[in-house]
Length: 68
Image 1 (tube, rainbow, N blue to C red):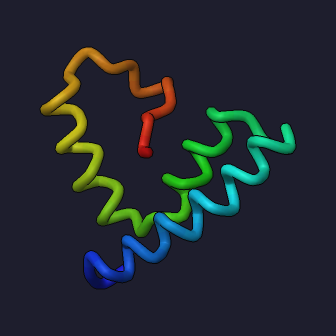
Image 2 (image 1 turned 90 degrees about the vertical axis):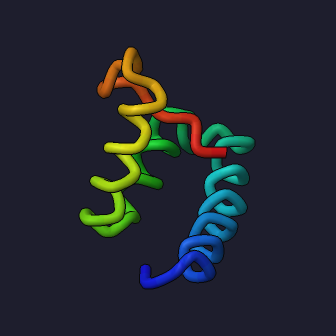
């Protein structure tokens, strides 16, 4: 992902597909969250994680993040 437009497209498509799977009970919310993270480039995820840890310092890293 090179820019915000590319990230936005990925996010929109991911939400559409994963929401469908959630509604059909094919995946759980935790799986949705973990799968989204795995779809991000490592460098981008590390930047996001650093930011999230600053704004939510008490969040357990083993719990999923609400990305909607």
